[in-house]
Image (cartoon, rainbow, N blue to C red):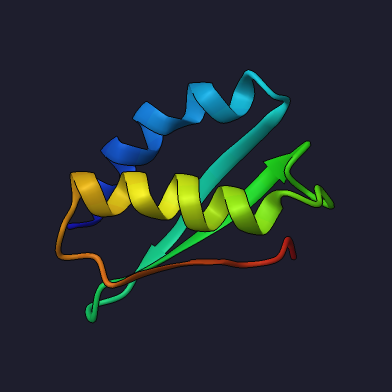
Length: 76
């Protein structure tokens, strides 16, 4: 499942990069939770949550229907 999610993220990445942002896959749990890190212009962006909910989550769930949720993790 992690490979499918990574493929979906790789397809989505150019759209985020076009606006100065980026995304990194952190983990995919056994119960279908995807953890991602939003990078670049996405950090501190007021539209970050909307991008995550309506953009990233929707796209990943369409590509990998067994995913239950997508969560953003903060940079370490």
